[in-house]
Length: 445
Image (tube, rainbow, N blue to C red; front, top):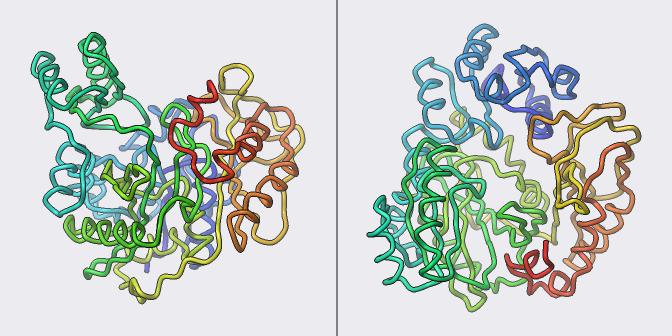
């Protein structure tokens, strides 16, 4: 087992990893930007090193500075959290060259799954259903012809990257050329790769993801699904497990497809396979995330499996002591992402000082956050400041518990979206479980 781990991330996920390491008796190193000097994760870690200025490009994306900090402190492994460098194959390759364990898959596998076109082909070869679409197309004329063959509406997707960038939905041919060029340009600017491919635009659909955990010895388990259909501009807001819309038969089929996909890629560590679900029993592979997901706590709540600790154990060479038949889903869990943003002003990001903080409590209520009273939320990073998670015996009770927890959450001094989340929980489509990825569009949000 590792003796010391460097955390190449910030905020609530850095706090989460530090807590997992403490329970395992592992020393931690935090790297931080100048803006994050007063941050909670910096004081929680056993050692902390400033690696650059407030912009992520100068600090949390500075590979040389992070690796230098790891070498200087004698860290044996690096945990990337999510976002930032967590799916950057170049960074993983540098870790491998420096003899530092990367807590995640190999650089080769991350590159393979990060290329969404190659990922589609890999899944198709493994027998996993994929959305009808094209291979990578760089010529706009060829892309337009292909779109005609697929049939409108289509979705243009960048081969690289994520986070909703390099994606355009095209409903009519007249809109296609401009949308394709815009998606390619955005992808080239954001990811250094303007290549795009096309998929049939399926609507209405649900966004379902399956959590897998794999060791170095061929052990693969699927820890059930998470429904992530409440989204705004392709960014998730509410996640829950299990999905209220998946039948036992569909769940079994998705579990089989996901374990097959993990085995076909030789996957190692924690990963998520994302699908679009039509509501009629049909599901299609969308992408694979080769890292820990923001919404991993809902899976932890319903399975009792600490994903961060097992991520570390697997990277250290520990064999999974349980098999698929040992996994049990108990009750229902819901997560609401608490963002420092103003729903009344188009969800504009907010920053400022937390003047008063009250965190809700009670059985099976969890708030993953890095904020504290008098903490200044800096303007340089993602607007998510916490994740409120609840667990109950069934979905109806979980919804009531989440509404209660949201009503107790007090964060004064900074505008946030907790009241908006409570409104979503009252929406009839959410209550009956019929909601799809188009819910917020239907609400004009």
